[in-house]
Image (tube, rainbow, N blue to C red):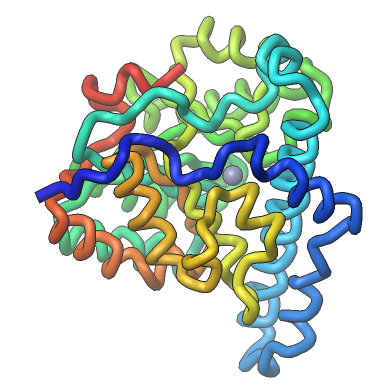
Length: 308
Ligand SMILES: [Zn+2]
């Protein structure tokens, strides 16, 4: 049975959070949690794991920065301006099909993680969508083939090299889309899906991808898997930006499940690069299935109203 919570986002009203957020931003927080984590982390076992954890940390830092910029813009700029410039359109405003969850994994393929994710999905016969960074797909074609072989799997375009589209000119944005499209074309199917890196959109690229036949996929549930990695849980600003309730600031699984419940389904954003998503995937699927949720992909007709 699907529980019956109120059908609204778990995020508290923006106005009520304004003062807290401004205080946070005025202090120029968050503290450098990534650095604290690095300092207190146990010594890496090998050069490979050291490189991997350094990569994960730098990814988390970039995610943290882009989230804080987004939060700041939401607080400082009129919503009409943000809407007119198509700036942050990845938070899906429409409700998902009731009781249906679409797991999505960004930023892969990721050697070591992709295989584990696919094994868990296959064991539970759950479909998923993989928004690939084409540059990485080119380096790991065998992982792309494995992902495609998962029954019900969908491959999506997540740009060539994952820049922040708000930091690059429009011509470069279209180059990123086109180059990824050229490499992934055969994997994308006849109704291709696109997801913006960091969810940072522009009107011009919206138009471009629509011309190319893409539909744009955001998310209902942001797992913020990158933020749960430190020993202290999420900072206040991260929790605010990610819609993580205070009770779940140290509880990744609890946050994702609560957010799915609040939406009664939805597109869930996770990252192949983040081990916390890999490590919790089995438990997440078991928990959601036990609560009666079914799994699908944003490409399914029932999700049409959630895409742009
Ligand atoms: Zn990404």
